[in-house]
Image 1 (cartoon, rainbow, N blue to C red):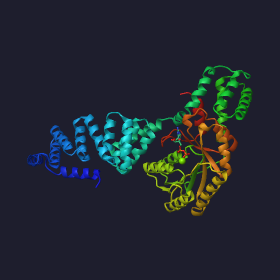
Image 2: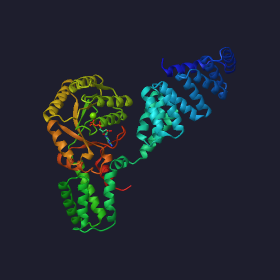
Image 3: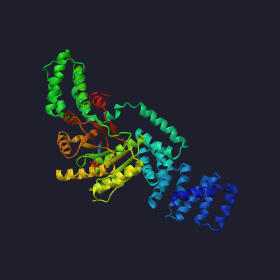
Image 4: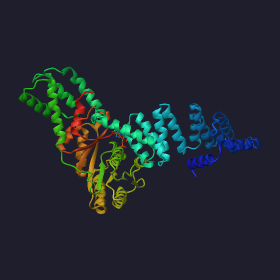
Length: 493
Ligand code: GDP
Ligand code: MG
């Protein structure tokens, strides 16, 4: 029996007796056995129910000194301290509980709740994540985690856990209220908020340069265009494309008779938007059949992280998602995914380290068909062995899918790290030569001032961008939108 069940059972037993008679009977028992922890615990419990918290506290404390290694004794003392308003002791005692029993979900939940009351939200998140991990069925813990995240301004993550809390216990009024509040916040948040966050460095760099020109007229041959060219190169658009863009913008400004700097930038914006929108169509999430999405890319570009993000993103849309951890090269990659899968409640198929990735995909494809999954997400190893090996491995995986899920809609999405700059171009070429890359995912946009490389790639290959990774957390994903992307790049505020 787990501690939680014990606690519930004990609560139930305790609540059946009459408070005053109970105190008298318990007092009598402790007179006979003054150092019996069980008798003292009963007395303390009875006193607490009768409203005698201060005296109850004394007995609970004595029990902790009689059985110093009993987590339940410390837990009882802790919650009574909490009730009596002695937060410092409650925290100390709860810390002792989890030291004695690191699997005690209930203690982590109490710790989290106290930290929330104390406005220590980061600490609350840490404790509550543990509580949720240990007891994924606890609606209260999910709710508390949601509340902590709300205060940490992570509205999307908060909504996710509050929603799960309500799914576990639809009568949980607090979760309902909090969820409504968080949803309101989300709806009010401009869609470009995340884009802005993601492109902040690119933006700051550009805006700094642009500031002195705002409101001024620029002459056709002026340094303004040279500066603009430099800015495009600095953000890794590539000198060839930058030169071409400048030429086109200049021509259009001339035709229009436009001379203001602001108008010239507007022309640039619409050019960039055109490039990013002029791509091959893609439909990786067809609602009428199994969709298989394989993430490919070199090591470290953020495939595994993005897979977890997409899994959660699709689950939020109520799609039935299955994960295949086919990067069997790195044991850590499988463990990492398992943790995410557990947190988001997503089923996962994985193999032993060193297992044949195609064997994992074989099991996963069968499971996806049997479960009538909407999407099967496959994480692959990114190690660049020889090109021939890589191609063979990817081909073998694809054959496995075709054999076991012949009607599936299969897409290879290539993940790139925005920091790679122009090198990303050669990665695209490599992967296009070994598999049918249908779309792009750009990760780590948050940490770069070089977001421009994607422009050259999209322009050359006409590959659509599907998602952007804008941070290390599972909520840090944005569905790509050319207009928002360009806006975030160039607009202040
Ligand atoms: P993989 O080798 O392609 O599977 O890459 P991982 O998913 O293991 O990620 C490699 C590292 O990049 C990890 O430390 C991630 O936390 C980090 N990372 C992934 N995506 C992002 C992102 O969008 N922004 C930032 N800042 N870091 C990221
Ligand atoms: Mg990985």
